[in-house]
Image (tube, rainbow, N blue to C red; front, side, top):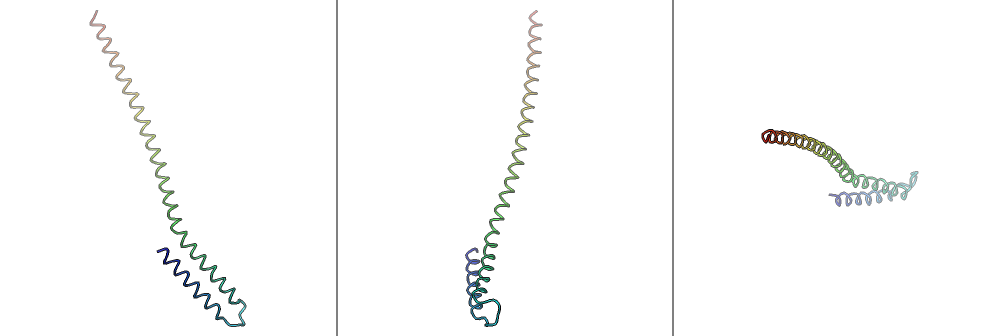
Length: 109
């Protein structure tokens, strides 16, 4: 698709240069000026066409980056929740072991 755009732009440039060379003598803009203006315009059009996919890629990259940041935050939150859960479970196990130890001591009396 890109090569087609470039080829079409080049054909347009040649056509405009040919038309510019066949201009009337009394005009304020000479053939070289018209050809230069046509080249400038075609160059701008080609540049605009080439920048479209780059802009889309940059936009997609930004979206991926934002999604990665959100995922990273979710993972961090889940890790913190899991850590708090493990701490609580460890405390509960410790309390149960302590109670069992107390019962063993009472039964040994």
